Image 1 (spheres, helix red, strand yellow):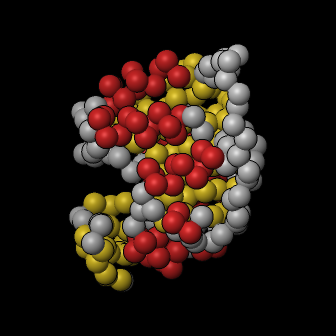
Image 2: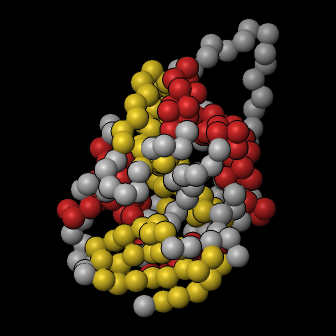
Length: 236
């Protein structure tokens, strides 16, 4: 249906087949949406299972690291009607394709930040924003030396009783990643998905907040976030 390429993601295709629309980048399927609007066929997919393990509160605030074609964003809106959604996607071509062909531009109360998560995190941290649900789906193959510092900072953005979910390869440091999160959360589980993909969902719920140090004076940050449909961290 559509083809293009990206310096970050390689060849990008939008493929319609059997009532589904798929976003394929570098030979990997990033997202699937049903053209009919019936999501029941995806109940076994990790996008759906990640929401099952999150104990979503009514009207949650959500952060997604890695947009793909937005399968999970659409599912979240269908199931929980989030108060707001923030999406961080490093590849502007992926974001443009998702907005044009996967209806991301129609999602209400959504903002899109184009940039690497390590560049966007300082802005999210300084604005003191907290999210009831965070999904990180951008470091599937990343080594813990690279991924864990980012994961720990994402953990600091989880609201009380909120949930952080990571998508990892089941045989590629999923166990080590879960172990690193256990001191920071009351409950951490690893759920292995079936199929050839070998996905493992790491679900960390209810962050443990360290007591404030009595000798430390908290810094105050002005909240400067502005709602934008699409922006770049460099302009924030």
